[in-house]
Length: 103
Image (cartoon, rainbow, N blue to C red; front, side):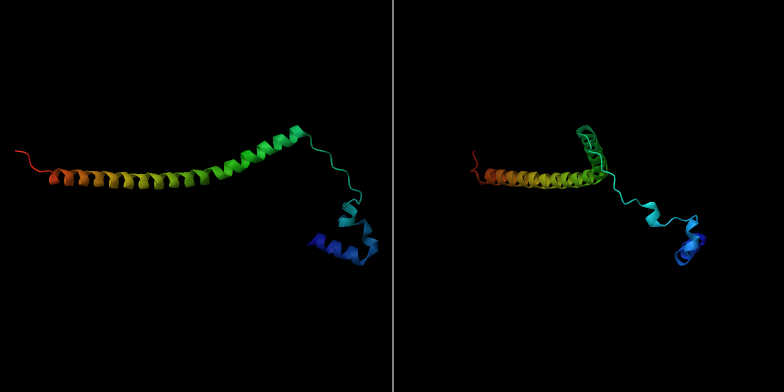
């Protein structure tokens, strides 16, 4: 609260210009310093680190999704194989029953 009061007094009274609370125009310099170019090695290192961080966050969700997909595929494959075996056994039994008996 003291800093807010000091800022308000400063804006009302120019004599308070030597206050301990700087204003934004005193802190920010209008001259912009040119940005240094990033070399290729630093950029590549940054890209690798970013990739590692994203994969670390995505990996658990990816594992969960792949696990669900594999469980679904396993269940579907099991149903298909069971159905094929059932149909093959039924056809074989029907064929055996339809054969004339040999005495």
